[in-house]
Image (cartoon, rainbow, N blue to C red; front, side, top):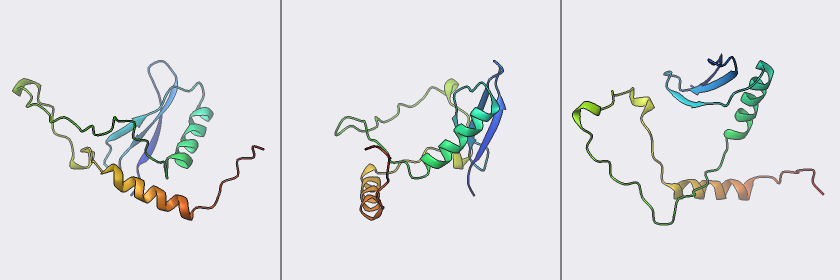
Length: 113
């Protein structure tokens, strides 16, 4: 099952949307829009662009995620549902799949001469 887009009005009376998992975990929140039509158009743009979005690795070469130090007992965050835990994927796997898609994909015409 896919995630859901939720359209809402924030405290400043601006329209926003959030993307949630099927379990209700918030993944992303949009910027503010003046009217509902603009927010809906932004949802459509996200749907179209994000499906096959490539990952740009901007991290320095050879960098890794540092090990987390043990948190003090008073600051331990509450455990969320397992579906909301961050998942880490090897970047090389994405590059291989992206390269395969590029070789098979038909060229996109941009209309620029």
